Image 1 (tube, rainbow, N blue to C red):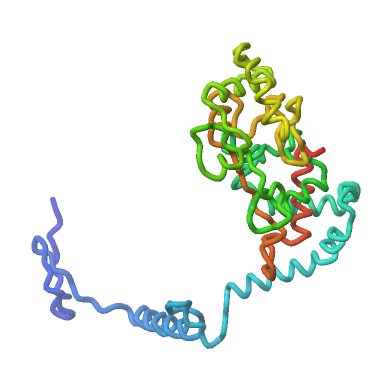
Image 2: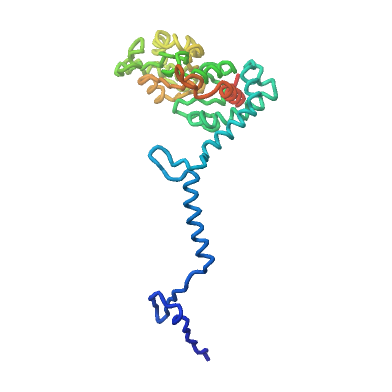
Amino acid sequence: MAKPIKEDHKSDKVGTTGHEWDGIQELNNPLPRWWVWVFYLTIIWGAAYTVAYPAWPLITGATPGVLGASVRADVAAEIQSFDDKNGPIKAKLVAADLTAIEGDEELKSYAMQAGKSVFMNNCAQCHGSGAAGVAGKGYPNLLDNDWLFGGDMTAIHTTITHGVRNTVDPDARNVGLVMPAWSDKASGPLADAASAKFTEEELGSVVHYVLKLSGQEADAAKATAGTQLFADNCAACHGEDGKGNRDMGAPNLTDAVWLYGGDEATLTATLTLGRQGVMPAWGYAGEGVAPRLTEDQIRSVAVYVHSLGGGE
């Protein structure tokens, strides 16, 4: 048998909110006094915090706060403290002969760790986090031993410092030198850079000659027709044997390593449209402008890249 419901006359003492559901009234009980005081204290604390610390956004920043606290300044100070601690090893790295760094365990250990960080923050966007490049996009694979400008420490350091074909550093590699557009239908600066214009048939002949050079399947008749065209127009950069010229950054056409791809369609596009990939200068940003990377960072990333397996 159900117990009788006891009437609650508490509502007569505290009143109700006026809300009622199925005969059940919501009492208007006051909050505990301690809770109210804690609530008021949090309001006071919040107001005091916005006065003491940066808080209110402005058009160009935020209110600084009377204590002058700055998270950015704290981070900068912490970074500076580590820079100061690493000062001696950085100075030693900058002063060392490039070819001797890998023989000094202390320098090599520091350079590898610092270089990996520099690479991930600045180079991985183009060369990939694993440094294998991006196939068909013109970003070189740094893991193999096929280097346009050489893969020894000095060559890598120079390439990183000055970049390739950029308009900032006058010492950049290949300034003013591009792979021209050879098609007679092409126009623009890359077409103007070509010493001759190929008809569609001639262009196809050169493509098949290059396919033959690299050991791929090629049309024998077209390859034969392209032999003289290659010798007259392409050998100046790529060499008579097609093995390239590092002084000019001209790639070896006889192997299976291709920056943009070595199939017939891609080779046709390369000859038709030309190529002019650019690498920024990391050690020079203009007169009076701080470079993207310091000398110790450039040396560190050069050591890291050289150690990846493709360094000569």
